Structure formats: structure tokens, C-alpha cells
Image (tube, rainbow, N blue to C red; front, side):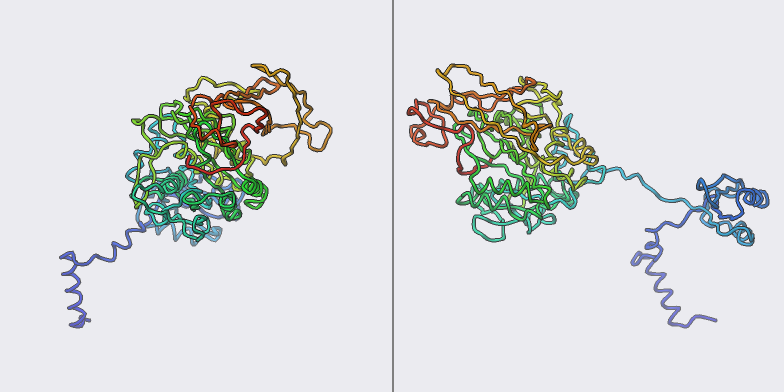
Length: 569
């Protein structure tokens, strides 16, 4: 039958369109699913067993390659006379096997397209500048190894407590979590920062990008946990009170897994300050009830007062047992000029040193990028992102589990300091770096197999010492039994808290240290009298080291003072 004129006209029009490239043939759509490629082997199921398969192989010219499973009725046959690769199945053998009554099932094998799931580095244009996690420094933070395992922070929620975050930033918006966000300065749900000519409220946006900047969107760089949910709490751009801090630290404790804070009391070398009553209660409730009882994870920057000989033990936020305090090192493994040394620092990540050093790449205000983020403010969010990766690997880790893991996953590496010591259990520790540079790969590997720690027990020892007279160097010794024989007997030590009350004329001249029975010496307070003090500071009874003699009998609790304001760290 000849085609109708209309059908013939449509065929000619279609052929002309193809020749001119105006349309593409439907076969192009099929190309996304490659045609099967048949090989010269078959899988067969024969109920009669090995002897029947041998008969079948001899009859049709196959080679019996044996059972597919150790036990069962499935066998592997190959035929040397069949092409090893063909676009069509072998119909002759198909008919022969189909007609044989002893063959229950058969299938000529085809090539399967399988690929190694090796990880490709993010395509973001500034990833090449992220030297601390792209193998351009050795060792780096070992982030790529974790990404190659498919861990990217999926399912983990991190909130940045700061001056707000630019929630519509091109590198943040897809990961932004409104449930992990609030504005406690203006009391509304929107944490968008307040814009000023000097862009002073860029701190939170920069910290957020380090944790969860989107990867492979061809913009800026990538966050450490680039698939984590990121929230922001605006609380540093206004009146800061104990209520504001407490509410910020207790926002959505069953939804937010990690709170990252890069602020604290002023890093001027004189201030001794810490959380107030409500904020201390927020910490306590967070670790006992947050995350369904597993405990909220509070990651804290250790402080930038190194130039003023400040000591982060005199910061009641970083020296709390409930926070995970993070210090900094330069790309060359040196102590940055701003770094504070203290016994409460647990771990270290990278930041910058002198002006010429490379700094941290992250998101910036006005939908921009920056490669000039620095200080311990930049180190803590890197650690928060790494902890998010570990939490994705094992969501059941408690707040104490994570501290154990961070200690064990931190290594001295190439970090240079004069005070590296081996403690009583054989770990190297430094007041500058804690236990060393945090290794994300090691952290995640240990997190996968970590067994939960036993419930926390507390043993309190009262020591009363009345020295007469006060000597330049005094030793106070106390034999302790760790509450042996009681229900709260301590067998494994995690934290030591010292609450020390004494009378002295100049707090800045004091150095206080704690020595363990195995000889590990921790400096609780270092001498801090190198900074001259303005006269007005002498009237501050809470926060300053006097440059002149204080009145006799001036009682102070060393490094456990009352609450004050918070400044970015």
C-alpha cells in the first residue's frame, strides 16, 4: 500500500528537518541508557545438581565453571565459540537451553556498567584556596578522606551564635535552617545581620560558611560539612545579658546538634569573666537534656588575647567542662600571635598568623566571598564542621563521647611549641594546642566504632590551706581517695574543676598550677601583669588585674568571676 499524501509529506518534512539539524532523532534520547552488551557466558539453574550440569555442558559445547553459590542449583557456563562481546544475544544457545527440560532458568550474561565511587574535589572556584583541607599543606585537616566516604554532614544541624547570618547568601541559602535560627537582639525569627558602612556584623556569616557553604555550585568555596543544615542566632549585635546568652544557648535543643560560638569576655589580658547563673544553667540543661539526652555539643573559640598575654583559663566559657575549646595554629605549624595558652584547650585547627599568611576562605556579607577570615574565630567553626561529620557517622555519640574522640583524634603533627609534654597516659599535650591538630579522618573512623562512656560521676574534695606567711612559691598537697568506697568512686578521670578562693594584692602576679599524681602539670593561671592598666580599670572589682596594690583583704575567685559582656573571639 502506498502511503497517503499527508503521511508522505510528513516523512519528507521530518527528513528535511533532520538533515538541517532542526530536530534530533529520538535515538539521542535512548543514548542515556546504553544497549546491553552480551558476553559468552550463561548462568543456569539446574535442579539435578553437578552431574546434570556436566551432561548439559558436554551436549551443547559449554565449559562448566562451577557453582555460583557454595551451595545451590545455580551454575556458571561459558562457550568458547561465542563472541566475547555482542550487541545481540546468541539465539541458538537460547533455544537449546530453553528446550532442555532439566534447565529451570538461564540468562546470558551482559556487561554491567559499574564505577568506583571515588570522590571528586568540589568544583567551587575558591576551593583551590582552601589550603587547610585540599592537601596543599601537610598535614591538612584530612577532610577529603571523610568526603570520599560519602560523609558531608547530612542530617546534622549546626547553629552559629553570633551577630546573625546572611541567610539568603548564594552559598548558604540551600542549607539554611530557620528552626535553628532566631534574633535575640530584636526578638524575631529572622537572624539577618544589620548592615553598616563598616560591615561590622559579618562575623556570623563568615563562621557559617566555614561549616556549611554549599559545594559544587560554582561559587566561593565549600564548607567542611557542606550538606549540614546551618542556622544562625543573632545575639551579639545589641544589649547582651545573661538572659540573651542563656536563651541563645538553649534554642531548640532537640533540633540543633552543635552550637558554635566564637566570642567571649574581652581578650585584654585583664578580664576574668564567665557565664552568669542562667547561662551556666543553659550549659547544664544542654548536656543533660539536649539531643534527646545525649547532650548538646558546644564548640568554643579559645580567644585572641595572646598579644596581651591573656589566658583562656580566665574565660569561663572556654574553661567550662561543657564546652569543647578550640585553639589555632598557622599554616607553618606555629603559635599565632593572637593565640592564648591555657589548660582548657582540647584541640586545634588552622587559621592564619602574620599578615602575609594565607587565611580562611568563607562566605561574606553582601553575597560575597572572602579569603581573609582569621583568628580563633575561624578555627572553632572548622572544628564544628568536623564534629558534624563525626556525628553523621555516629549520631548516638554523647557530649562526653565527643570530647574523648576529639582528644584521641588530635595529633601534635608539626605544631611547634616549647611546652609539649607527655601526660600520665602517654598522650602529648600543650597549653598552646591542647592535644594537637584535629584530624577529621581519624575522628570519623573512631566515631564509627566508639562504645558509649559510662555515666558521669562526680567526686568533690575540699582543701583548706592557711599559709603563714605567704611565700613566693607555695605547694599545697592533698592525698585524695577519689571517693573510694562510695557510689561516686572515680575510676577514670575526664575533667578536673578547681574553684580557688584566695586573698592577694595583685591578681596579675599570680601563677597557679595543678600537678597530677603522675606528674602532669597544668597551668590554671599564668602571670598576667605585662599590660599597663588605665586608672579607671582599678575601680572594676570583677574584671581586671590591678597595676597597683589592692586594698588588704580583697577577696577574689581566680578565673571564676561573675558574668560580663561578650565580644567576638
